[in-house]
Image (cartoon, rainbow, N blue to C red):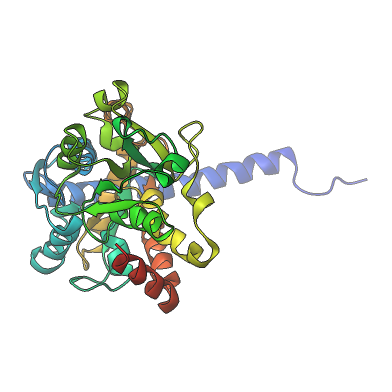
Length: 351
């Protein structure tokens, strides 16, 4: 019986032909990648990459931005120098509006405005001068956990003792529409004795107020204490509520939200799920956005970056790629229905 199919000699011949065909294709790919790298180096070599930070120096946002910026430029072809520019105000909206209105879309200026500006963008809030769907998203270090920290000296050690407190407890905030205010406002709407104190422009300043007894509590991300871990080590503060199952024995925010307010959960937890987005203005050329996105993901996998991030108690190992981040923001904006926006606004006015 004749053998069906190719003989060994035929296979060898076909393999040889395939190798001869693949070799120039592989060479073309290598040349194309080299050309892209060369063009990227032409864009950034000898240039300065400016990173705008939406909060004052010393807080959690500033700490993350400086760690990311310091390592990001190492992975951008051409190795640009880095300039960090703090532009505090309105919980990141001042920085974001500046990026949108005043910055050239050339890929040489990026921003880490804060943790909640994109929620205000998705809600089309007053004072928002940017289209949240059109920005150039580069990436995020990853999601975080937030918690409600209360001074131990108040005698409050859990939600039940907060509910039974003989006087209203004061909570510092970074802005009336940030999670630092909205979550305490939610507790107030549920009958907890809560009073909100606004006017703080950075996490570092709120922590000083907490240390000095100027306020009783603070809803914030865990990494806010990266530079002030002494407040936790000395048991000056304790967590009594959180968004993720990270702190043992501490209940979840999702467990205490009543049914009529549950649609708000996606807005209240968005800052934890999104982390700290790194963005560039709308209209940056796609090839430059890809350069920054690729550099960000290469940085996120780098051991030196991860070591610095861990020291600053930043998330490591679950970075969010730029394209995914852009899709998440789009989903948030799409899900912000008129009913949810109305409920969110009511919670704002309940403070």
